Length: 277
Image (cartoon, rainbow, N blue to C red; front, side, top):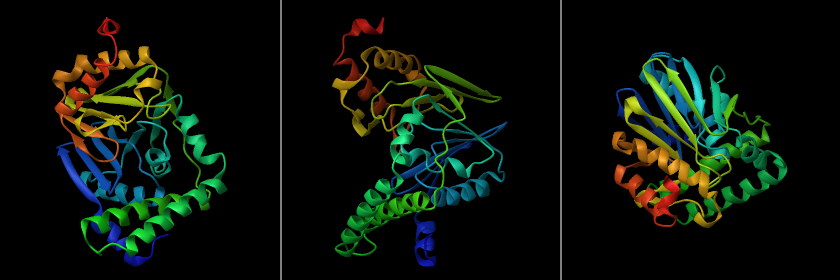
């Protein structure tokens, strides 16, 4: 649990961005979740690294939307910094790929080992803080990272269970929620075992998790992926690309359509175009 000083500092550093009239992006450093308001309830994309931070995000979302009818949480993949806050949305169903359980288990197979690893990371960030000028951009970056890992450590220490998806799929899935449709496809084993892409046509948004960053730089080794699955996903994205305006990355970056095009081109330049047919 954070002390009062840190808690107030955290509150002041949580950024709330209104992407459009129905979409909020909240981030604390590299921790990020997105909330989409539909006429059937609120959908969350990714849940952050911990219950304590995500509880703060949840209250902010409720204050903006003036409601708390959370119906789904969609995990872009099963890494702990994207599913750690799943339990906060207790009334919502969690959606993710079949392989999320593989990625989650890596964190929980040996909690003691995970605590040691996190403790070392926290200590390293504390050392960096001691050598950084307080309240500079560098200091805030280090501080938010330290807090993220402290909150993850707290969840493991307190035996907060990792909540796996209630609804899973292997290839693709569509959620139709009245005025909003969520189209999802499995990207194949790449950044994780469970990466999915989420497209919302009504809002012209696509969520790409941790698949790539600015300028379309892939966050995985192209030589070790499932080529067939990869190309199927690229075709799926290409068919929708003219109807996408914003790309939301898994740690709070809002990327452009040009970044998405560059990512696709990076893939297409490596593999045979004939695989697109």
